[in-house]
Length: 441
Ligand code: UDX
Image (cartoon, rainbow, N blue to C red; front, side, top):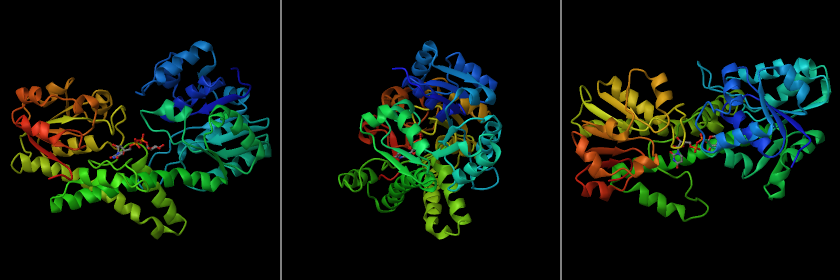
């Protein structure tokens, strides 16, 4: 079905590329904008610059219909679109915990001079509370259309690996705005989701900004909660897997994000909780979020604990030892290595003198670029060849399904640390392995 509204998506990273392709899939004419010519060329040719299951098909289909284009030109985007979605990254600042807003600011500065007619601008990037109000004032002051530029904030909750599904079928749509026009436009963009009965919540700008960071803070807290229980289990001989399972039947608690192991990483949870703490500090409510410091600390301790278990298994020192590492991505079904717990552990063990070889089904190229001093293998068996200990650090299906007998044939010693509680301990022990996991006896 042909849609009337024309949509520009500013920033074609993970979020923007997914959003642009999915909006075209819903029938809108979409122009994706990125300053990176190589990215624009790649997307225009139907090639994704990152790994995301299912997205390449959506991209190809909508390039073929002619509904989806990419550009580096702000003038073209402004001439084309009725609504602009800001989807640029907000990484952690190099020198502090706060969010680095340079890409958001530069997008707004670049777009503003071309906004000569009434336009809607909706931010999707994760930003510190207060940013949207600041941007609104800036657009009103600098765009030729002045107050005719109306702003909303609609945070994106998509998970990597489920980007298409989460964009087309989100569990809710949140829109912060005080403009009736922005709400009308967002309802039109979201018509197919509204027809499915997906909740649509309209808030003020500040609340919408906060929903995103508080959701991520809650998820990070849930993971660190169960990992704190894992620490207690380790000290007392209890089993955190049985504990988590028993907790999960209480539907007030639920079983999701209660998976104990090496903890959370990635481009969102770690930097979002830090930026949230930094913003609370600026707002004078630092104590309200001081618990997130513990959430972060618990998460970091899991990495140290994994290293300690491995060191214990090989007699107390990594110097000169051979270690096979399974996993580099921060989670399975992704090639993203930002703040990857797996690579953090691998590089630390390597710096302690071990000979570390890493294998990952999708993230090898990214890992090699960032960590040229590590060794990389192209298969699981190659990575664990001659290993005195094997570390499973990202729970890809390929590793879950690994055959202990087959691996036993190539390793030097049958010892494995299951950093993700992904394997069946009895099965591996039956095949002669010394099996160790986080939070289990
Ligand atoms: C997250 C949020 O889920 C998403 O809503 C938001 O928009 C962006 O941040 P993502 O970073 O893609 O998404 O990853 P997610 O699937 O949430 O996993 C985050 C991390 O938590 C991973 O490192 C994962 O391994 C870890 N995790 C997750 C656990 O350690 N245990 C769990 O039980 C669940």
